[in-house]
Length: 73
Image (cartoon, rainbow, N blue to C red; front, side, top):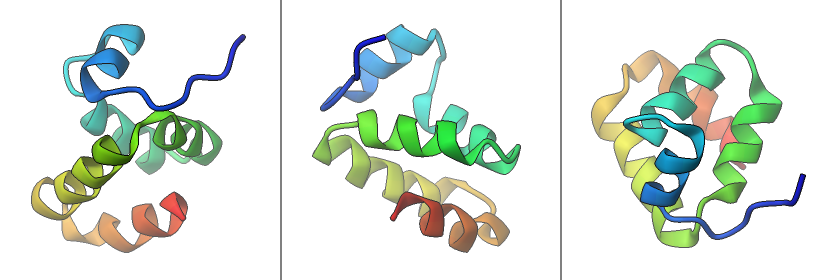
């Protein structure tokens, strides 16, 4: 399988057949599949990564913020 890099949010949603890739990424991380989360995060382009961090802060429950942010770096 070829590596995917610099993909937009819309491209990722179509590829993984989900309505919101950010919600999917949070669910993957919460369920403990950290390697898949990191792969998904690194497939996003720079702007989409910024949008994900904003989504995390604004939309996700606060108890997950630190855990997910630690997994992104």
